[in-house]
Image (cartoon, rainbow, N blue to C red; front, top):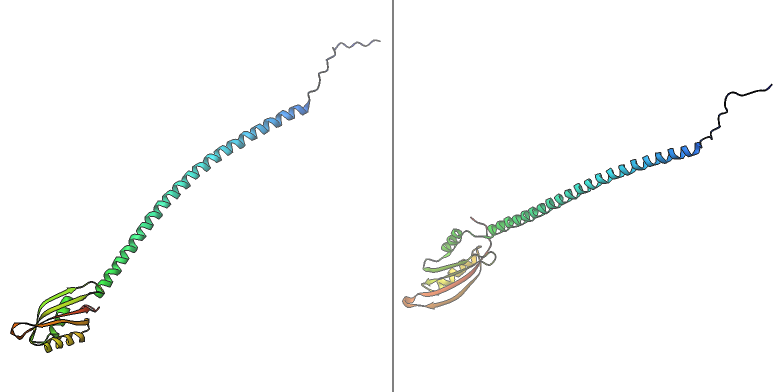
Length: 182
């Protein structure tokens, strides 16, 4: 007997290589991952750049604020120094009415004051008195009384000369001491 195969023989097709399909799949997967990473890095870089600009702006504004604060601090120090200078000058100054009362109280009855000049520079105050007296003894008494005063120091009798009518011209200079105001 003969066997006849009515079915045509199907030509065997070669089997596809499974390895090449996996390689393509892995390459595509790596390509997708690479695009995802590069996109992430691009976005991160943009965010970092934006944050860097923000930080630079903050630094600039802080520098401006610090400069303003330093200027304000310098002005406050200058103002405090001025206030302290005013307090010091106020403590060193003498009330003119008090000084005139002191001189008048220590002037003998026969001594006349014709000129009184004051220099009230703090620490260097001076008073110059000139006038006439009935005697040299009255002038010396006047000088002695001024030396006893707490308002004055370095009382110097500079000159005396006799004028018509038996009067004596005189000139006395003295330093003003630091005293509190009355």
